[in-house]
Amino acid sequence: MRFLITGGAGFIGAALANRLVREGHHVRVLDDLSAGDPLRLDSRVLFTRGDVKDVPKLWTLLQNIGCVYHLAARVSVPESILYPRDYNDVNVGGTVAVMEAVRDAGVKRVVLASSGAVYGEQPQQPVSEKSIPHPDSPYGVSKIASEHYVFTIGALCDIETVALRIFNAYGPGQFVPASHAPVIPQFLKQALGGGSLIVFGNGNQTRDFVYIDDVVDALFAAAMASGVDRRIINVGSGQEVSINQLVEKVARATGRKVSHLYSQANDGGVSRLVADISLARRELAYSPQVDLDEGLELMLALDPQFRVAVDQ
Ligand code: NAD
Image (cartoon, rainbow, N blue to C red; front, side, top):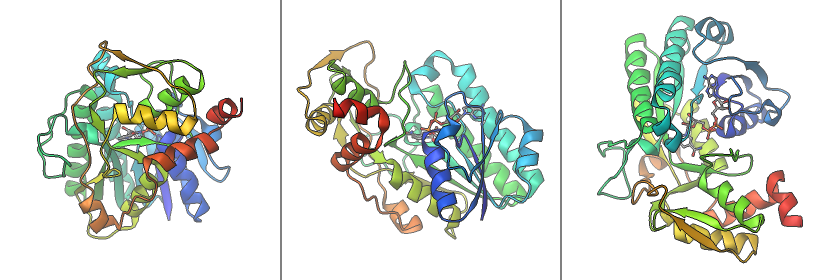
């Protein structure tokens, strides 16, 4: 099959692109490199630098494409609170641009990378797709809006659409930006650097950490599965882990004596979030293979940024 991946030089996009070309598919990537790195891509992936809102560029890249994975986005919850206009512009505007171009190019299917962040605080855990979203950040709102645009334009224009609500993805190749870094690579970096782990809030808040290969399995299946048109599907591990438990797991995996500090600079976000993955199991034959302890070991073994520190 022939795929276009927007945001394909990012953490999830590059892992997906490399998996698809390894399996013999033809893959194009569009990424503005605001957070991505084309060096992560297998040489068989055709990379184009550009903005996802550039519809003429999308038209060119969409020639003969059967399925689009739309991943290009700004991805930080705290950053979205500081810059909501940017998040609306890139995440919502980018999605509308992709759907407009897809409509004109005759693409058959679009898979949207949505997020578990749409749910916000939910009394019922694990959270199923039937729960009413209460996003608590502009990022979450931008993902809900993206889902609506994808499904609505898809239905109007006879394009199959699927939205995967991905929970907290982690794994080798995950970027650690200077600010607003995702918690797992941040903790590993702090632990290996001999510093204290900074825990926001009281650390009792829980999350669902899902290993990158499992996310890629779900994305892959979402392009191939039948009967998933206009479905929203959770993609997580189904395992609930508190940030305090994560601190212990990072200490065990790194073998370092790890100290941690609590910071009230940020309340740590929603109190609980874990995915009900029964729909993904049913519709995508999804079955997460890597638990958090194993995933941390794999990150330390496979990611060069951590391997150097582990060897010291
Ligand atoms: P990432 O930042 O590594 O990837 C996003 C990519 O989009 C980057 O390579 C960036 O350069 C590119 N991009 C940003 N703005 C762009 C623009 N205007 N034009 C073209 N490219 C642009 O993040 P990721 O973790 O790989 O996330 C990929 C997708 O999955 C995003 O849509 C994100 O919202 C979604 N998602 C990620 C997670 C997670 O835990 N990583 C969880 C839920 C959903």
